[in-house]
Length: 229
Image (cartoon, rainbow, N blue to C red; front, side):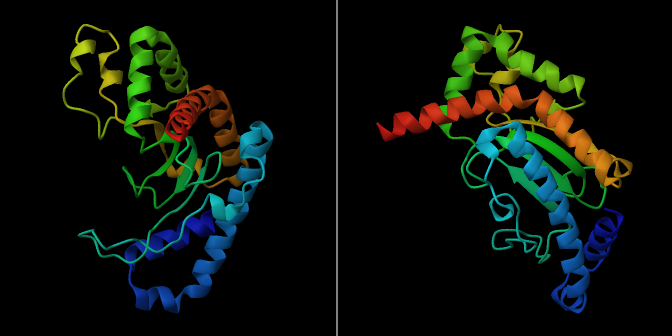
């Protein structure tokens, strides 16, 4: 993985089309190396969860080109590779497992990271999770506690500033502020250089936290069924 990271560093420092086209061969080598790792991860996740079996690389990975239409940052390329494995693929709207290899910064998108869940949910999904928090908050809290044992934490970046009034006295009120449910951990550069150790680590963390993904996808499936009715 060291060669992949080295290319990403070079791209980060020379993020323009002229440099990229001149180093197209280096990009293709780095992309293919990452994709080889991503295929192994995808295969093992398919063995862990049959709902992920049969997914192809194109269902779970992303183009290097950035969408700059609405961004003040006009850098044409991402300086990271990533894979998101969810039932039905990356566009399904389902919760899943994410790995992001970058240049080793302190925050997204430059940090190496893993994440579990999803960043964007339908309003109905959020409503049902909040109902569950009222009925039995220990279920969701159990998912969070398990994740914390593995060094992960909830992403509160886009959470509500104020607690919904029905949760004002709840010890779990911060969970009710969430509009998306994602557990994440930024990783030190030393953790992502050895592919075998990295693969084993990701699979272990993803397996331990699968109940969180299963719960979210049950909620998502329910909202989709209601919409169809």
